[in-house]
Image (cartoon, rainbow, N blue to C red):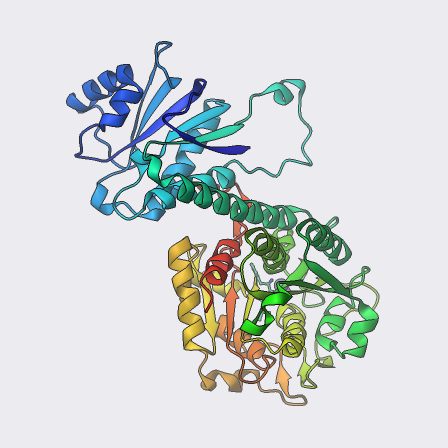
Length: 501
Ligand code: BES
Ligand code: MN
Ligand code: ZN
């Protein structure tokens, strides 16, 4: 699908649907009257009769071969202007795309000026419409057979963003371009995650990361099993012991020329499938555990976007990739392993594997002497119980970094909510025959998991951990996402890194 930015002064061929926004209690905009005079007459009549008031998500649609912009015109209700927020515009765009797809429209024309006001500016509007149009049209259907009829079905091909305020053209173009790069990153993350465990194993994830890196001209190194042994990465090695494919530590690097301004490390959990190991998971919903590499997918995709946007930061993406399975010689409960920083861990539960592989990756960050580390992981079921799919669980050691991430979350709609990392929680993971246990008992599981990670963060390094267990997957379709991987975190990280100081 393509996004095109179009000025009202430009010549254009008719679209299939023309959509304008309408705020409750306002008058129909003059621009709509001049763009589509006949539709304006119909819309005014509907407004006068109270058939359409412009309440949020209410819409009025009418059809005529005399219309200029498209045969079908839609007025989409946005509620009251004073309450209009970026989030409302995101939802509205998603609903408009669903509507267009239900109508089998190939070309949709959205009149930008009518959708902004209240909080969002014209540039915000252009960005949001571009971004959400791409996200809402995504499907993962590569493994589905299609009938001849289905193959012939019209797809949504073009979303045109029509604007009238000419003076903003270059700002609008820039916003549209940036938003599309970000959305493509989200879609890449979704596809990596939606791929099933029999296809997307550690070597495959490494291959896809390499391919992306070559396309985007960034560095990619894959640390293999032998190198991990040398580095004593007991966490990664022991978790992967029950897998028939070798583990990989994927290291992506962008922007070495900006090194003098400091390095940011992004770490993503890459468990390509989590059976739980010997502490095996219940059968119900286990198929979803292919999304246990969502953190890794997000980090890989984000590095690609950073390169597209040429952000002036040095970023290293580290994603340990393993499969947590049971084969000939799996990790056993009670095993004591040694992690890359020399700390020993008694594995009380082989299903708490994410923290073991992340621990080694966090230690590895130390060699970059980063000024910040952000990790993303589908780490605990408890986090999904706590926040549902509405917030990312956030924990960390640095107030400034935490608030920077929090703000980026508000800005992008990928909200983060902080949980405490008080020392009092440490007792729960203190080991008996070892330095640490890998679980902290039944209570406070999201926090004790993060407390465990903290043991492996290089000294004096600002660090934020994002638990995306609840947000990385959606079970029921949302305005911008079908059932499956959401690609959460790409927008958040890009927003963080776009305003890096
Ligand atoms: N990948 C899971 C966490 C998870 C569960 C993510 C459900 C998304 C949905 C993680 O490896 C895990 O199994 N965590 C355990 C930890 C427990 C053994 C302390 C959990 O959450 O049950
Ligand atoms: Mn697990
Ligand atoms: Zn897991």
